[in-house]
Image (cartoon, rainbow, N blue to C red):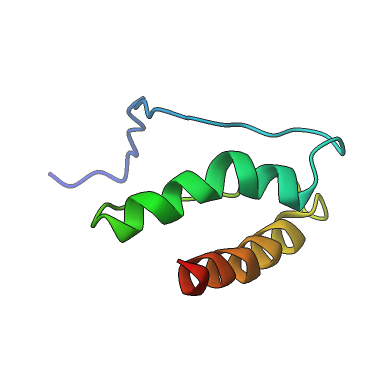
Amino acid sequence: MITNKTSIQPDECKVDYAYSGAGHDNQKIFNEMMIPLVDLSLQGGLGTVFSYGQTGSGKTYTIQGMITRVCDALFDR
């Protein structure tokens, strides 16, 4: 018998940083979060940046700012 019931199971993940509100500019976020990920990637590691929030809250602006800074940091190193 096939049913169309959806089951949502809780899951957990570790979050190193969470930024909320207008008090965090792109450079601050880059310095705290992205520089360690750049260093990790240059040592063969992997990292993920997850940008989540309400429409219009600045996710695209922030991620675009991070991409530019990460590229610069990779080529500088």
